[in-house]
Amino acid sequence: MQEGEKIWFDGGLVDWVDAKIHVLSHALHYGSGAFEGIRAYETDRGTGVFHLTEHLERLHRSCEMYFMTVPFSVETLAAAVHETIAANALRSCYVRPLVFRGYKELGVNPLNCPVQVVIAVWPWGAYLGEEALQKGIRGMISSWRRIGPNTIPAAAKASGQYLNSQLAKIEAVKHGYDEAILLNEQGMIADGSGENVFAVHKGRLFTPPTQASCLPGITRASVMRIADLLGYETVERDLTRSDLYFADEVFLTGTAAEVTPVASVDDHEIGAGPITREIQATFFDVVHGRHPLSAEYLEFPVSDRATAS
Ligand SMILES: Cc1ncc(COP(=O)(O)O)c(C=O)c1O
Image (tube, rainbow, N blue to C red; front, side, top):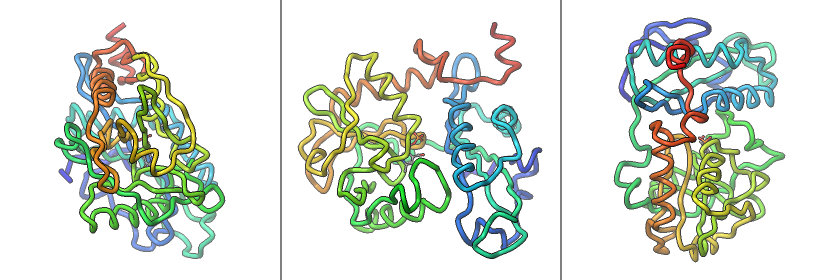
């Protein structure tokens, strides 16, 4: 990670090196936090943050699941994101807002611990590597099952649920694969360790429904809209692992992974196909401000908006 200058911490900017918490903070022991991954892209109009409000609304929802009252509104956090990017003099970056239970008591009950908020930004290139964006990654179906709606609900992007993702990711990497795809308790495709999954069959897109325990991805929804504009229908339905093996194309979507082709699943060769490439190219046009959807999907600081209009 490339160190920056400033981190937004509980209402104001502090020096990067001073953004510290106590070792007995609740979140460190019990995973009691919720976070977002957001990307900001360089455009002709300046730095545009992709779906900023939607990400922060999801953060608020995730916190609600765990009765963490976020002490800042979505509007305040949105302004703080722009302020943090500017304070670090970055034109494009990854943005990580985190809400967590701090230091007070250390029982499992989190309710008496303070709720704290940080926003950090740093440059982050292609999550699965530049080559992955071109050629695709080698995926494996994990032996670990995805958390379920009655264990840890996937709809909330909580810190602790990423232990499940870590088990799958570690297994995949140790077996020589790039990424893990997890099945849910019913044995249907759920999610990548940090991405949503799409399969292309005969010109149609298929992706698991959110009931399959995938995160309701913001990139997923954007890609479905882009696909529709390009004339491809998306069907949300349960997928088996053989639906991936026999697919014409498979790709992953996520803030970090953007649109990444899957070259193989469990060594069944698939390859990066033309529909994935077309969707990926359009996605990059959108996030870089070169598409009619950009105006809707990218958010700029209020002062820039006033100047632009
Ligand atoms: C498990 C999981 N699935 C899917 C996604 C993709 O979600 P989004 O497109 O909102 O980043 C992520 C990333 O946040 C994730 O961690």
